[in-house]
Image (tube, rainbow, N blue to C red; front, side):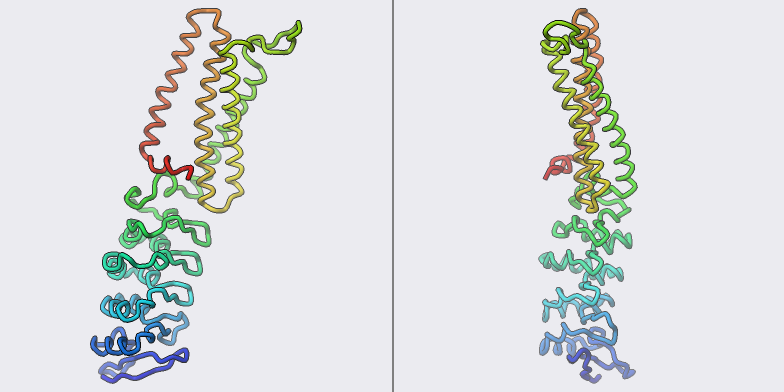
Length: 343
């Protein structure tokens, strides 16, 4: 074997000739010792772009593309700075490993280099894609799981299209182990549109009912006397509770509608998800407030009788029993998401 120096991009790059005298890049040389000696004497050469291509790949990029773990280990040993070098597409070696599905490289990095810089794990290329984005786009579950279950890999980073990696994943995985919960990791554009349309309809309906109830108050208005135009039952406690809860229902439903209008004009996925969560909580609150308003409104006009107010209250309380059971199931299913919704 003979070692020759070639000059690319004004810097020398080592090539080793095999028995057929065809030039082969350093990382596929048959002599590991020669490679190590060259790297040890001039480690900075590992950072030089190699080959005639226009992608500006270093030896680490090429070694990763070939899945050559031996060479990758040597490069990291003699020139760890190479880990941070990116090519013309702003992709580091992890992007290359994921793009060309080099599972052995990804596994090696995950198991042997647990302290690798987060800037490398979460590096974004010219399209804003991290290695996890690329794995998600290719639906490569085996590789994606290495990143998903790594707590140092951010799942919140969005690419140039405003999408996170978890928005692109369509295979099953342990969402709790990955640190993503609830609707955050499974909401897509269609789901957002459907949920927005439905919640907007519910919010508008509640707002209409609450507004109407607030104008046409139970018991009507005083038609004559010094208090003409005021509510007949204004001094009763149940009537005051009715007004308060009805007002709460109106305001919450209106704010839910407002949130959905905001969703239509927001671009960032995180902002959209946040507004949808707020709208959902407001819708729940307005529904419960409207039921309480109905109970107190019915009670105040039926107070002259003994049986009917009690019957109405008991029947309406059945709603809370079933509603709270369903709500509890939802909260316990995604408890971490509920607790962090307002962060």
